[in-house]
Image 1 (cartoon, rainbow, N blue to C red):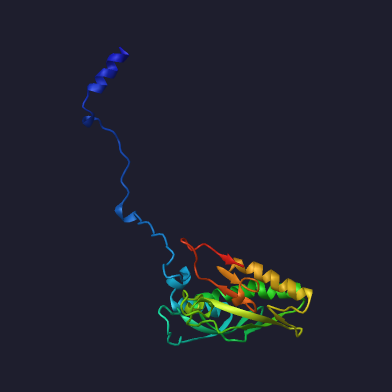
Image 2 (cartoon, rainbow, N blue to C red):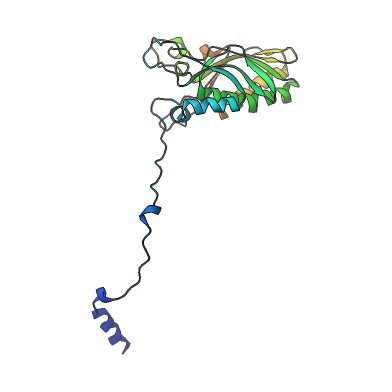
Length: 236
């Protein structure tokens, strides 16, 4: 009897069966997926490619960075360009002014990254390691239209995009001047060695004494992307 009932149901026209179906979602409630952000192909950091100039500079002001909008000089090499250039004079850390003696010209995106590095590593580390405050940083000019290692035939340097800064020394509130290539005491050596290692948490490239003949007297920091996915770092 049970078998016959099954056959009877199977023989029924399935179109005639009143099978409830879930209601359709209204078209107005559907959301298109947000396109995945992809690293730019021109070697610039994602932030520099997507964040408007005004928004970036507003963040610099909120972060306590003393700067002026700048106009980059005309480059003499193809590809030299700096996005949202600013000339940075100082960075405020706990109401203290840390001067950048070179007043470097930087991409706004790099200026944000470097100010964060100063506020959250360089200045606190000085207090903890040196028992004194960081009052100034001696730096290079930042933006320079040139090839890597001053070679016009080489690939463009991160400096040619305003994405790099060279630092030669740190001035401390107790009067010490700590050069990257010559520290006067063990505390100073610990300070430079520690900040150099930790800098790889902020920058994609960190070079200094011992890396190559071109960085024997300063530390080089940049945020240019490396590798196929932009995630490769060079820390030497």
